[in-house]
Image 1 (cartoon, rainbow, N blue to C red):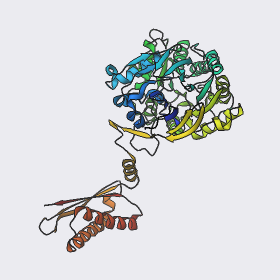
Image 2: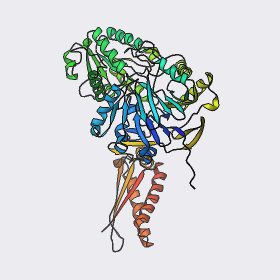
Image 3: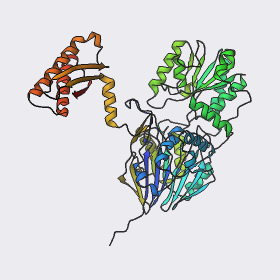
Image 4: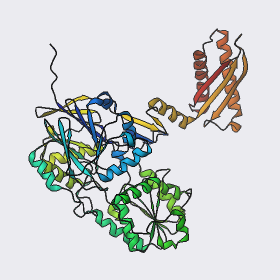
Length: 558
């Protein structure tokens, strides 16, 4: 007699916990799975050559028949950027609000997936039936319009995912957070709350977007020459403020950077940006206009090496040069880990002679975060009154601080789960505990390759970047094993050949003597020959240089 399977609720993250980026959260009950968000993150410094990182969806692929759909909370890259990769392997329905869906459709069109993907438009009033679960939504404030939180009604109780949020009492687009709906959910009972932890270390309240518009306009009025302003392409509120300030100061705007051009186009078409007739000009036109009549709206607020602002700072941009006396505004806070890139870009801008406005928004006034600070996180906890709390969306120290805030508003410590990606919180008969672990990790994207670069390849890249490579080419006789040609040594990134002829000649001699010795001992397996050559040459080079280059022997027989 087979043992009956007990249905339980499982909640876990495949990305976005203990890190900034690649957000993906899973709610499962019995044979039904709902996924919330599908983002990417940018590579860390030791991920050499990697373009982007997406979540490992092995668990979802193993249970593909149970996945009822992916709900997207808003249109930022760390929430939608993985879709075009994931949907190639897991073709399930997508649910998103109007602007978010517009941004997603551009990505799917570029990936050739638009016709194959079932896309569903939702709003804050929508209700979705997803197997045995039901999803409903509530409006939130964030730095992009059409952001929503999600309530998943399960047989065990309601699971609420806040999305990214803050409480802005004077939003620039007059889309107010639906506090009444949040309180209503709290009064009905929230079993588990998954809440944004990005600003859990920041006391007080996050400033209103409306205050930024006044500061930007003031900078525009004071600038004697061109203004270059860099921000996140998806920060549509900020883009609107730049356009409004340009209109007020009689300047024209040119948009630089592929992602910025795409977002301005989509948001304009869908009615999320108000762009006066004749406001936008082509980059080629700015040199024909008076310097105090031009604004350049650019990507590159994170100092990314190939971004528009960084290339302008290095004078390598094809269309725009920054000139002494220009004003450059970096209207964004560096993502943790990007501070050095931003600092390098600021240095290069200042060398040119530009006036640079950068740093925390609380000092410059030209940026506010899209995430709630401690008092807003407490407000969300008090509105929802969850039985169990799982802090998400942030590095581990942020999750831990959010847990402390939850305790301070009365949630028992034993009901708070600070988890890592892959850790499952299981709920059975209203009682939650930490369960088993599912596969969760990074899938690395390098060019067109998805997941074909792993730890071994990264280790080789790191070794190559540190001490370079030596290629040893030798041709042996098939008959008697005598050396017919070589050894020839090719050095790349190890030593400058012209100044190290003596070292390389001695390396040649060591390779030749090693091979002759092996042949005299009747060792003729290629793998063994290569290993002995690498060991002998590696020891010699380390003794002489204290470096360990990658050694690649190529042995041919004729």
